[in-house]
Length: 610
Ligand code: BES
Ligand code: ZN
Image (tube, rainbow, N blue to C red; front, side, top):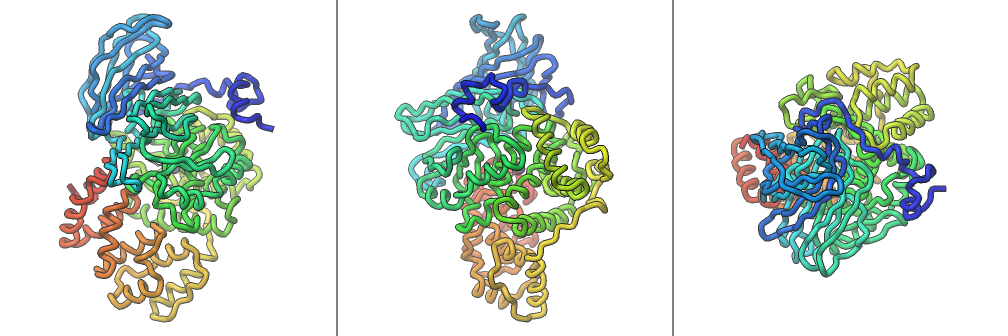
């Protein structure tokens, strides 16, 4: 039996307690990361101590980070839009004294390198700094943008290279660090981080301490400050969200503990102690972010019927693929996401059955094929070349779905039992390490020498190889039959359809629909009033394309409330297809911009050619 977490902490040195000590030793990847200025071979950060004050008035974080370092010569940190006021150095056990530093020129994508000249014997480096109100990682919300409407809200998004906009550090996924933090907020404000969250409610001082004792890549350091409450789901799981959403969220995620248990049965001990989920206000720019111990998620997955919980299975899966075994560089991103989608499928299968899991997979494969057709060949590889590019450009369905399909192809060839023990072994072998695609390839060859699959073709060639497994879904075939009937003008049978079937139906409808057809669909199936954000978004693309008047209000309400890029991008894109639509899109964007996260603002501006 696994000892209880608290016991495990004190018995940390016992071999039976995961994580094992040798696994926790931070590793250094020697492959250069083109998205970081850090030169870890010379001097590297091992541990960071934050002391930050959250200033909602000025929208800045102010304070210090103290790095414990290894090495000598020059320490190079990544920064972006930070105002650095002072740098101090200290030897082991000695006191801090000002040391020389230089902030280099800022690159649009990478930010600016901060080079600290280390007096000999330096073991600690303290940087005094302040963030910018436009820091890419930070979204500051007015009380009006929250559900409670009383307190402002702040949260961070680090992946891929935004952590440097709120902490000067070596911002490469190949460099793992432990961290501690003192976060000072206003009286009775509440803060949570991707760390131990011992404090479950706000305290009068508004000051909080955090500790992350397991080495993680910097993109996983995360903070949120806002009026959220905690609700326990199971022994080691729970939900944080604003009070008005608490009941609904707790119902939607009542399977949280079962999810963790299912994942453990498949892939071994959950090594991060607790698994909690923070449901953010609707402006959150992505679906979910796997911040260790505390997944950040969009409220748009609250559908009322658990139909969108696969997103939580996905973020939970990252506790193995991504957080335990991490991509060494952003070109290896498929190692994070491809494995995670595969594991997500397996968790969904364990909880909700093969039919649902295959149906969800088949829908994603359809989306992959559509997107692939728009990508240049080099971006259809699993391992992608990001030289001179923003790592966000590598975030397509290719690393996710093509990656998962390759793993499925391996499973199909060697059999599930053998593949399950391969993956288990992979997570154990590389636990708390960051690895390259090449390391994966050689481990695969070593462990599954009989494998005939042409893995190189999958990783380094465009498109989907002939060996791509077919993902069949009987439930979606039913929908296809009804779509054919719809096109012929015949009555369609939608009885007992589940959310994914409706989604497939909406995505399969002809692009051109008459006002009469739109009206009939809406009257019969109530799409405009759907509580399911995926269904609503798919419907709204038809609303735009066919200029369906009765739903224009719903469209504008959605664009004004939701900040999730996955929904915003296709909707703005659809509008921008006609000159009049583009004018309207620009006007709506100008109006809603303040509600969107800086990352989403950049992405939509790009879509609209601004
Ligand atoms: N780690 C990603 C989010 C991410 C990727 C942020 C790259 C920034 C850069 C997260 O696990 C994720 O994939 N989220 C998806 C949902 C998932 C179910 C596919 C999202 O946010 O849409
Ligand atoms: Zn992911």
